[in-house]
Image 1 (cartoon, rainbow, N blue to C red):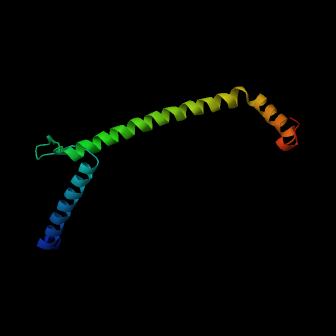
Image 2: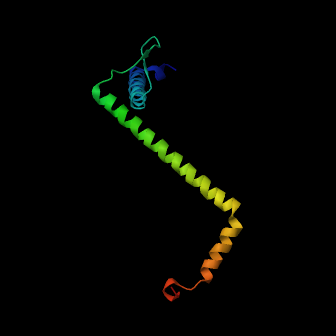
Image 3: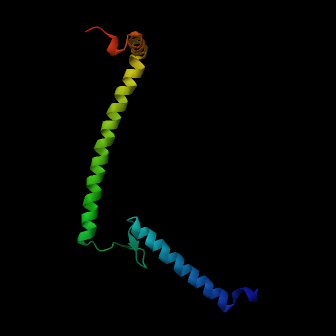
Length: 108
């Protein structure tokens, strides 16, 4: 048991703990989580003009993506309506179009 608590093993443990703490803090900062001081109170990083501009750009992009998602949902709803409500008639219309001669051969 005494061989397990040598100064080298304790040193490796302390260094490993310090590296893990630094990596954890870096990940939290990168993803926007608030930092905590030694008493567990949140400490927010300072906001500079670059951070504020990045936040504005991200907000604008978020709004654009939400609008695009809304239009995609509307289009999907229309496609679902066409497929479910008029599936048989659409199939019949497609078959009728297949029976028509090509445009070049049709009389005007």
